[in-house]
Amino acid sequence: MAHFAEIKESNNEVVRVLVFSNEDVNAHGGDLSTEAEEWVKTSTPRSVDEPVYWKQTSYNNNFRKKYAGPNMIYNSSLDMFVGAEPGGPGWTLDSNGDWQPGSTYPTELEYEVDPSTIMPIQIYWDSSSSKWKGVKKKLNDTVLTWNSETNTWE
Image (cartoon, rainbow, N blue to C red):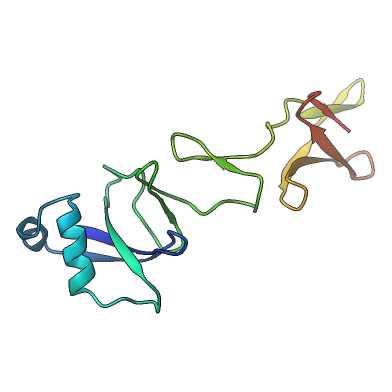
């Protein structure tokens, strides 16, 4: 069985994935061919009221990085299906098709409450500021912002 993702032309978002017989795909150019993609496009009604295109996807992740699913994005430069951008603006897609935060991950992961007590900093990504934030729970829930240039909490 061959799986094809229906993708919106406007934003490259995957709408759905349908299954077609290998015989039909082979009769129309074969796996990963533009001919098979065009055959799927002309023989399958659109599920959305806007222009779409189709790309073959691998159920076993053998090509195009991941098996496509609704709301994923097809990145034509990388020829991969990737997850939607996490957490809003500030993230970049690396050459492996993985999202990276716009700021380096903090290297200071814990703090000293007293000489005998070390506590982890609760770290999270703040999409509104596009920065890493950290909470020191034992210090009145103090919220800090990671400065990736100086590698310190502020």
